[in-house]
Length: 292
Image 1 (spheres, one colour):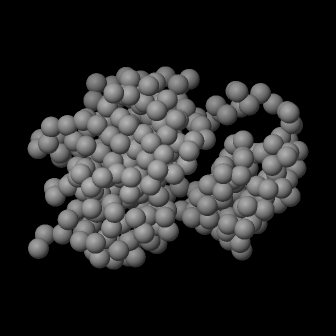
Image 2 (cartoon, one colour):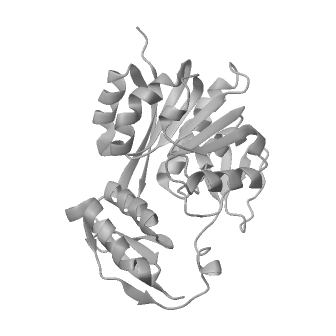
């Protein structure tokens, strides 16, 4: 069966995230992010029968912040090989390398290696927001290592499970990952099995409210500001007294509003990391309970 391509030009990274999410939900086969003249362009690949529905969903989701081109046929090619182009091992944090299964990474005694292939759930280590989250998790786990034996981690919006599994690979005792997307948990479990981490990780489909308030040493959420803001009281409630909350998926322009929202639930920013990618300045934040 042939496929079609829908080019969607977006005004900002948040609009791009929304386009990706609604495209997958509407039945996309794949999404390619490219830098084009005038900004960011998402190439959404779809079965012909779903093309119009995907284009309409993108237009409805982001409105004037995206320009959705008419679907057009694409030449037949071997997608089983084409998706591998341009993918390589990524040094995601000082102590962690993330690589696809078909790329060998140079072994280093001070670095763990996590194998994650691209799939329909977000997270391979190739996006700045994932790398920033892993960087802050690495730092927080290194600090906890001397004080807590077997840190517990909660990953909200887990996608491929890369953050939860990365945390376990970096020394956490266990991790729980949740996502509303029904495709995410099965993919995360498969990645856990690939890396021999199934016994120390648990993934499920459901909301944050499904996790009891038993505290976690680290809670991480790689979500855009609009998605994470209403979750902050629930996230704070699940952070242990001496634990930390790591937020990624933010833009540097979100910093002031996110800091204010964290302060409102009794958390203060203790560390942050930034990275520029595709013309956007991505931001990740670590927050802990304010000292009174």
